[in-house]
Amino acid sequence: WFLGVLIGFGFLAWIKAAKNKLDHNSGLIQVALTVVCAYTSFALAEGVFHVSGVLSTVAASLVLAHQMWPEVVSHETMHTMWHMFEYLGNTIIFFLAGALTGNIMVHTPLMDYLHLLSI
Image (cartoon, rainbow, N blue to C red; front, side, top):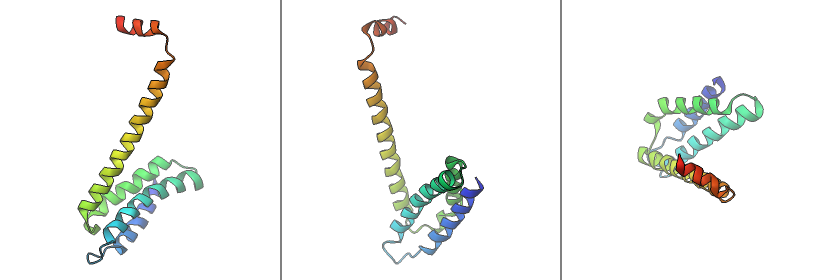
């Protein structure tokens, strides 16, 4: 998790550097930096240092969640983009779960369904 904290503070400095309320693209740059922080912390932890990428990503995100908000140019843009990412992730997960379940149900014998209904 220490690696994630370091990466989180590094990206926090980068987000602070991108804070320019007069520039229209600053909000988009800051959103992109939060996404890149998540992927970078996971990839470096798993691929280079062979430690838990999930813990590294969580630690980096906790640093950003605690320290970043006063530096964010557009809070609405940040919330909107992350809600969109959440929606897309949920859609993909449930689509894949439904596809796998449907594939399994086609090959299940009818008698198993009757046993299920009797329970």
